[in-house]
Image 1 (cartoon, rainbow, N blue to C red):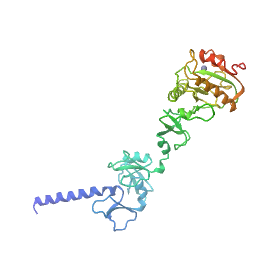
Image 2: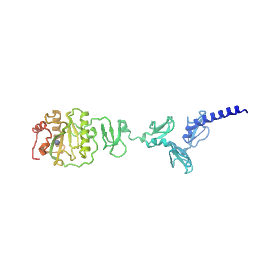
Image 3: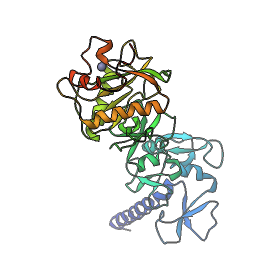
Image 4: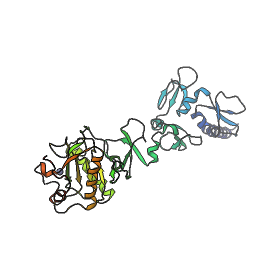
Length: 363
Ligand SMILES: [Zn+2]
């Protein structure tokens, strides 16, 4: 044999070896071995993982399946493992353990398994969470994805003490009751409390969970009128943006437990739920435990709110009486009646002076 022929032979051998080892790699990655599928296999055969003819297929051992499901491979744990070893996932001796690759951790943390995406997946495949080739992807089983109702709403699950740009929903997320679904875009929902006036619920405007609450004794004898001395609003989107801003200001700057008022009202003619009917508010110093309060969004020193907003508050008070939250013998006050403040603005104050039960008793 000439040295030239020796060289050619070596090249040919290397080429064949390189070729075949490389294309059996998917089977090896699966912890199996390539063999003709006419041979017995203790576990199951997998197609498309081996080089050669179609009948040369990948046999994995039955009791190695838990490791394969984890996206790992069974080996003696004296061998190096780029990720971590897991016990109880492999057949054989106690030292034969399941090695998952370090690069698969994002998928495992996500609640899925890394596998070749030609395999069936009961849920969905996600890219960028597994090591290896691009078609080795993270399969997250459908059953594990119990946040799916929130995802279907195009929302995300978060602790509801956090801000939400849209609306909050209960019962769409796993975990504690405080872990709730924040949908980016707000959806208008009425509390359904009152038949003739809409009360937009806290969840609808995306209220943060209060730091604390305390229950007020109802029916209350007093009802107070305020203005926010802030921005006006005449649409749902503008009013909920006001609501979020006022709550953030009261909680973050004033360090109150929640938005101060019991209810607010926009010139869109809708009531927006603040602390609601049953909680002590932070609106009228000295009277918070004996009164509920509604605040008109805007500054009403020189002009009165429109009739839609005025009528909504009148109906809110009547609804409160019918629900037993406001005493039938209540008295109505402006904030300025019990403080040095000019609230609720002179123009608005001049209107409420004409309303039923204005100062019906002394504060
Ligand atoms: Zn006030």
